[in-house]
Structure formats: C-alpha cells, structure tokens
Length: 150
Image 1 (cartoon, rainbow, N blue to C red):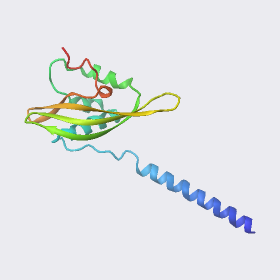
Image 2 (cartoon, rainbow, N blue to C red):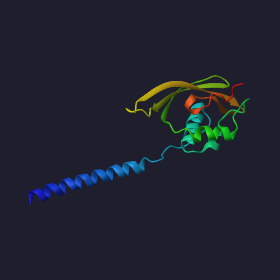
Image 3 (cartoon, rainbow, N blue to C red):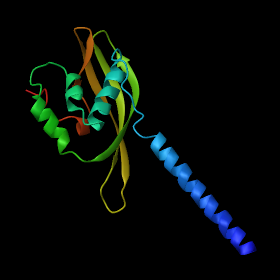
Image 4 (cartoon, rainbow, N blue to C red):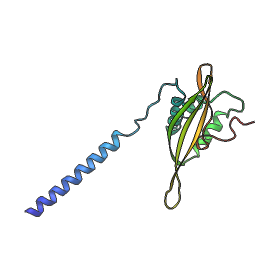
C-alpha cells in the first residue's frame, strides 16, 4: 500500500507540473502590444512588433518618405525570407529637435552546432516628418543596406 501512495503522489506532482507549465505557456502567448506613436522608442518597438507579427504594411508606415525608400514589395520580400532567430532590447534615446537615435541591442542565435548566442549594439535613426517620427536607418538585421542609399 505504501508503494501505491508513493506512486500516486509522484503522479499527482507530475500532473500538477504539466498543468502549471501549460498554463504559463498559454497565458504568456502574444502579450506584446503596440505603444503610442509619440516617442521614437515607441516607433522602434512598434516596427519590431509589426515585423514579428508579419504585419509588414504597418511596419512599412514607420519608414521615412525620403529618397530611395524601398517599395512595399521590396520591403516585404526582405522579411519574408529572413528566418533568423533574434531578439532585441531598446535602450537609451537621444533626441534633438527633429532627429533621434535609439540604442538597440540585437540578440542573435547562430544555427551552428552549439547554438551560440551573440549580442551587438547599434542605433536606429529617426527623423521628425510632419510631426511624426519616421525611421531612416536601423540595424542591419531589420534593414537592407540599399534602402535610402544613393
């Protein structure tokens, strides 16, 4: 009888852990939301979130209307075939009258044998156009070098 109780307790603990794990998994799903668009760091957050959700039309609206802006088709194609595993952290923001730089730490996982992870810090550059912040430069993994170049 003692062995049956011990086995029952072990099975109950395992069942509890499985239920707790599944609950946490489903509660944390897709809890990222878009932020107000009044600050440069919010624009960057919204740009990343739109790309992650596959909402490329929304991400495209955050781009500056400058010369050599990519077509929507070029923009969408750039992200459709990019399957790298990466994350980001938005850091400090430096704002002048019509320009802003937002520090971004990009985390990428390599697809190598040991799944190495590496971080690097770059800046996003935004300009104020007609009262709205628009992106003119981002770190490479979220930006094609040919965009806005002459």
